[in-house]
Every structure is written in structure tokens, then in C-alpha cells.
Amino acid sequence: MNTERTAGGPTLELAVHGPDPGPELAELHHALTAAGVASVEEVGFRQPEPGRRVGELAEVLTLLAAGVSDLVAAVESIRQWLAVRAAAASHRPTTSSEDGVTKVVITLAGETLTLVNPTDRATSEAIAQFYERHRQD
Image (tube, rainbow, N blue to C red):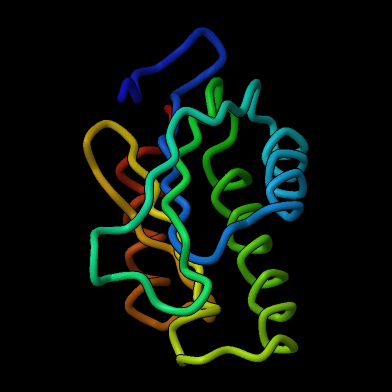
């Protein structure tokens, strides 16, 4: 997938792993555009590998977020979306501790950053380093 810079800023590839985001996906689109992303487009959808499906884990959905004017705001909007999604999942019964877990893998310029909720110290440090490497001068 193309994660090159567009006129408004870089393009992020977002791979959303976990239970079907369904109606919550519109909230992610809105959060990203409110954070200054010029456009969000669904570009891929796939089932997990055979034998890897558990509970309601249904797919990996790939989005392209183009024209990212503020990387920090975009990443923080994804983290907030994950927090809301995790809170909602905590109220639903699951058959496995991993069923309700959603992660978003962000790819920018060939580098990936994996976000989950809650964020641990190592992930917080990885986020800070990601921001430093990709800050726009």
C-alpha cells in the first residue's frame, strides 16, 4: 500500500485487527478527520488465517488516512477510539480474553507502530520515538 506523502501531509496505513468494528468505524473516521486527516478510505478487508479465528474476531480492516497534517493528533485520536472500544467491549461477554481486543497497526514510511488499549510503558515509549522520527520540521 502507498504510504507516501500527499499534498496535505503523509498517508498512514491503518490495519485494524480484532472484532468487526461495524458502527464504531464511523466514529474512527470522524475522529481522524477532526484530527486534521484530509481523507479516510477503506482499502482492504480480510479474514484471519485458518485456525486463528476466535470468538467474534472476524477480520483485519485496512484504512488509508491521507493528508495527515498533525501526526500526534491523528495517533491520539486512534488511541482514544481504542479506549472507547475497549470500554464497550468490557460490557460484552466473550469466550476468550483476546476476543474483545482490538489493535491498530499504523504504517508510515515503512515503519510500523502497534497500538492497543490499555497502553503500557513500552508502547508509550515507542509512540514517543515514532513521533520524534516522523515529526515534520
